[in-house]
Length: 247
Length: 145
Image (tube, rainbow over all chains, first blue to last red; front, side):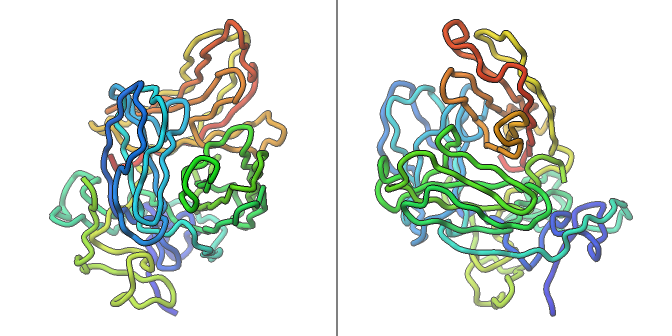
């Protein structure tokens, strides 16, 4: 038995629950492979590659939309139709509503991967700050003594997005139950292959409206697509972090 | 910008169970120097409960303003729980529209704050569908810009 784990500030690493850790060798984080920006103009139509990643698999990605100095997560009101293939990130959207800068990140993580980290310690430890803690991993060409936290790849005095479970469902699956057994309702990301709109095999972030609903209990996620699922496939990530408490 | 990972940086490598740290791909690592990761400020994580005002018309309502003072516009994420929904365990990521009447929740960051909003676009002909409903928001402000 070997490995490494680092607790978040204020928690004893030997008793900290899984979600009270900053990282563990038992499960992955989300390494950022690439990031960048792409400018769009209101009233225009786009159908073009934003970035070529050439990873050979469909990667997890996320984006934000900055409009006049305000950065919206995904979008102000609606999602943009941005999708990934095994080689590119693509914007295919008609009549863009807002002149904006899209900020995107591609993660070094296959989206279509069945993975389950399991639960190691589920009971939270009491918080007590001994002052004796810390792991700092600076980014290339940045000093470990930097006072800017964004100069670090990982810091144990910040939280990381720790992956608990990932998976996917094939075309035609209109809904399912995903057991997680975390003991709390967890944060998640959902992606969708929508061949009605995008090329087969391309995945976009799932916009949650009345036709796609996610509910959660302390043991499972339930998702349901209320449209015709004959051209729809779904992929998800569940994080070791509660969705409705600070945790 | 583009690729930001530095794969020949092998100063610190922690592999996942059953994987060799010396030979594994970044996808099989728990931690690897040369990569940046999403990082969330401990004091910039929170939960906010909000009741949608009744009788709302076209307007933008501030659910919450959280000060971060990072000096740059950070990434973030925000989830919402419909406490009065068909099932109180129903969640969504923002932005969230009701899908019918152009009422939606949204959130944005500036160089100093995170703002969560409730927006009613067409209150004159399409009254809000959530008057008096209770929602819970979970936000995380990242260190990353």
